[in-house]
Amino acid sequence: MLSGSIVALVTPWTEDGSAIDTAALKALVDWHVEQGTNALLPCGTTGESPVFTHDEQHEMIRLTAEYAAGRIPVLAGAGSNCTREAVSLACAAEKNGADAILTITPYYNKPTQEGIFQHFKAVREAMPLPMVLYNVPSRTGVNLAPETAARVAELGNIDSVKEASGSLDQALALLNSGVRVLSGEDGLTWPLMAIGGSGTISVVANFAPRLVSDMCKAAHAGDMAEARRLHGIVHELTQVAFCETNPIPAKTALVELGKCHESFRLPLVPMSSGKRAELITCMKKHKLL
Image (cartoon, rainbow, N blue to C red; front, side, top):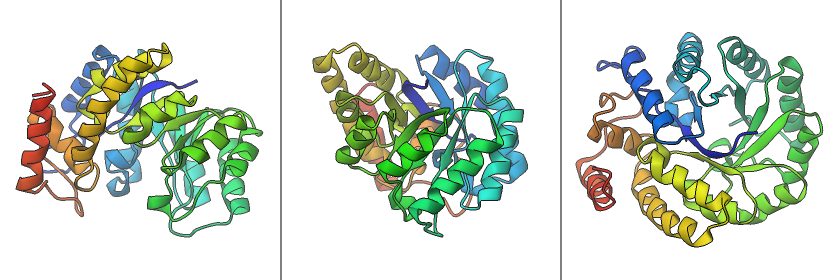
């Protein structure tokens, strides 16, 4: 069961963007383990998954699992809006050492709730790893209804839902149906954990891993005052982490920390100078730089 701070890991490219920077990736994995991160998510949207080849995706998962070396779980991004492709990617993630998979609702083609159920059912039946269902209507154009998630959970071995609808009402409906919930929005992690959520799949934790981990620990321990205090800092960092398209600010923050090259694949481009200055100012304010 995945819980606590799960980092939606950026992909460190080589300087020319042609390949995964394996040395930088290994250093990031080691740093996250040392900083108290509870699990790693390679190949999510924050990892620039839309611009991976399938071979690169398999390699990123394999390397992350190899470098984690069983110290913390690896939750591999393995979704697609094509069910056959989602099945293939999930099976490949298992072969490449993932401990669980994150699989998104089909995007752009906007299936019905029955179509979403059948999509997840096909993935569930194809491989044995635990699954985290990902609901992010702002990107996919379709919402995973709580009752549909509950139907999928009845198939077994569904770890949780990564809930990024922005609705605490929807998160509570999932929790009331017995489905575990992980926050998919950094700005709502503490409120969601306060109503029973298990943790977060975090963008901010890329460059503030100890902070997010400590916030989750405080929430799990029932120390709401400390969790709320840390949430205030995370909330400020969230504003700058999403002031431009994710993962541009998060990767830029890691560049400032000396963790990776400032390398993006089109259509993503480097951060604008004004927004970058805001990001750096906020990081310095909270002693991250």
